[in-house]
Image 1 (cartoon, rainbow, N blue to C red):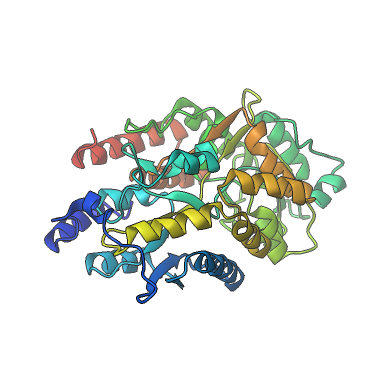
Image 2 (image 1 turned 45 degrees about the horizontal axis):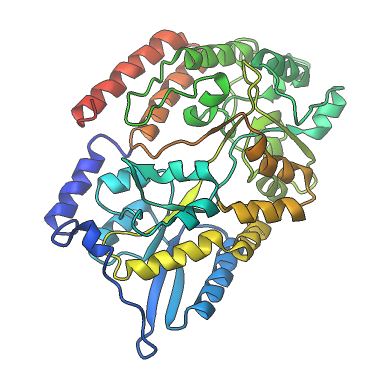
Length: 433
């Protein structure tokens, strides 16, 4: 959430300028005629600020779409900031298709994107991994099709050389308890002559290690954020997770402050294990192509294999002049295996289609990538965060408490209880409770 009242402010602006208005979202969905050969139609595809190789791969997919749909041209553009996107929608000049993640909840509440249920048939639903739809479903309506940089987000990534040096190994099919994991982490930690930590087995501030919604399921708090219910950032399992982690690292190694560098495992080489998703091998190789890594399931108190899906979808902004053609482009890019393979080859990003994962499993020999791909069928539980506008707020409140606990400024229980009171007060103020 971008601060208290952000959604209400933009709803007011949108209503004032008549965007979410006279024809309504359903009427907008009926606009847009098929292009004639005399009047080619140009669609703007607005994507993230991904690297040139990813943009080129998307553009190659667009060329195949254009070849199949004479009379339609597509321009691929990086979108800029989210404020830029909002201004364009409010001004009546939105892109035709927008790459959008869990902020779909905020943007749908503000009336900035349209629901896609009338376009999504059973055939398309079956082509996408089922759990991924939940990422873009809000108040019973789907606002985005899982498409780009999506996929499995959880895996414990280990520095293979550090494991071997310490006489340790990890089984990619075994789930440790968190107590067992921290015993490994302690054996991987190193000190200088003065007793200062120069390498830590696990730094809770790296990677996905500190994000509430990615770490909570692996501590048994799968139910901490019920759909349209009251989040529980003071869930007993979350309290235990935070206090246990703080005691196991910062309490055990006084003076160690940790680093927020996501890729300390590859850039600083002072951490042995970190939680990263299917993007990890590509991102790590771009920083240290020689670093050999291993991957395993995240620890879990009951030995449960937990995976999570999350990423980016393609949606249609309110006011897009040809929503039917926009959706045609979305469906193509989300299900075209060649496009997704090219994006994968360019960056390691995964998509959302079942056929893509089947093809990748058949083609990819890298055991790390294969582990992530196969984890979706091997998991006991697949977590799929919903795009609730209060999800980022709960994460931010947790982060404030987390940092205090890590610094030894209080215990996890009372601090999380207070954060819970703040969250519920804000939800009441915005009409959610």
